Length: 164
Image (tube, rainbow, N blue to C red):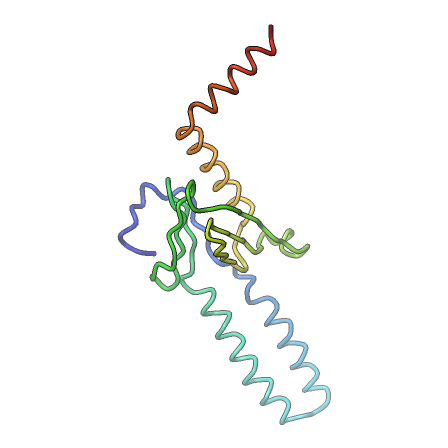
């Protein structure tokens, strides 16, 4: 994470789940079992190189990638470099979480953020994505209440009028 970000304002940190290695491990294990069963040495070496590449890609996606919610912004850092900084109130238009059944059991999923310019970012294998989304929505609601007091007064007037 960037050292410039004040730690006192960090509300939630999302990191990549260790389960990013699950599917590459299962596929590599199955292919390894197949190559040993069929005594295919050429296939074994191709499998070894392919598995190594897949695990390197998974490791690079896992290592030092985090998404942070502060009081006003959502930051994404990859290997210490800030990729984006979006305002919670002004820029973020849509927040969605996608989880398959295994993701619901193991508590990981894909977070989708869309800003007002229709730029989309997908964070795959995010650890605890539902909590991240809930925190983001809660902060957005708190900030919009502070920004738009007229709307809150209209709601209060409507509830007062309905009681009479």
